[in-house]
Image 1 (tube, rainbow, N blue to C red):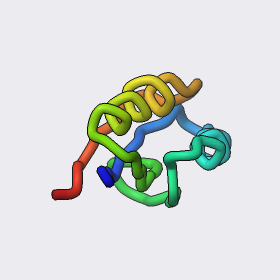
Image 2: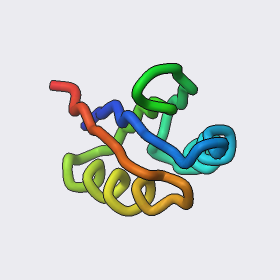
Image 3: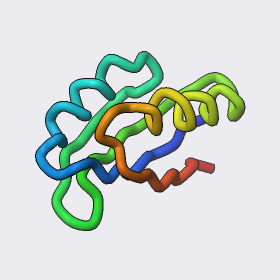
Length: 75
């Protein structure tokens, strides 16, 4: 099992919308709205590192109103 925490910056005012979109992605297990440099933190789980990369690169980064991400892979 591959696990990552993805820190997400959104367009201003779209945090709740992006949070809802993230919760619809099967591999996203938890979503937190946070204060600070980032707007959201998502815990993502996938069977393989390739699947994890696919989810982050295409499903998360492809969402409307996602400006940038920073991924931290759990070792």
